[in-house]
Image 1 (cartoon, helix red, strand yellow):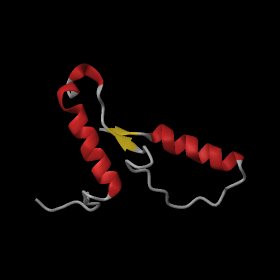
Image 2 (cartoon, one colour):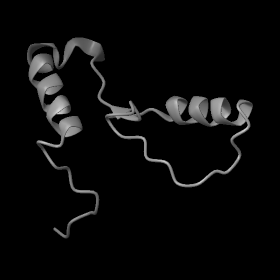
Image 3 (cartoon, rainbow, N blue to C red):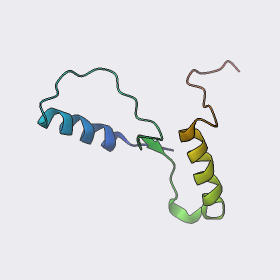
Length: 72
C-alpha cells in the first residue's frame, strides 16, 4: 500500500501559496489519490484490471471500506 504523503504536502503548499491558511482536517483517500497500491515488481500484473475495478467501486461508493478498526 502507498500513503501518498506527497499529494498532501503538495496540496498544502498549493493552498498556502493561494493565501489559504485556515488548515483543518483533510481526507486523502483513493478518490483524491491520497492512498494507493504498488504495481512495481510485476507481482500484481495479472490482476491489475481487477484491482482497478475494485478501486473504482470504492471511489464510487459501491464498496464501503470501514474507517474504524475492528476487534479480532
